Image (tube, rainbow, N blue to C red):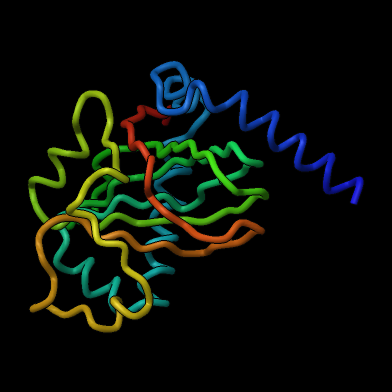
Length: 194
């Protein structure tokens, strides 16, 4: 019990230190400076291949998407106050990487623990790309055109049920926190070193 209290106190301290900078330019610049474009590309492509292998609905959606923004590893931690963040790449329908992004979010409420997960955003039309490339970043959780795809919806996806907008898939969830959401998430473009 004492060990759990120490871990929760440490997570809280790290969360509070990270929270004020979440999604702002200084954290974006530091994140980009400490990231490698080749590593983000490799990990994003591998995560998308794995998602396609496990989920035929995601693969079908990917065949029609104009691009897929893949965040292969997002770390989330918190105790009452929480924060999460990770890097990803935009993989266009041609297979080319067209940009690098970070996702960051802060939350408040009944939560405790640490988890890791990934998510992919399937951008189906030009309007989704315009939202993504806004100068101040994209407030993902506030966009009404995003559909969170769970296992039930995934099984029923077909060329006739796919609409415009953006579809989100979560994958590779590990850790102690329950429930995943994009509410409060902000996606910002980064320029990592080669």
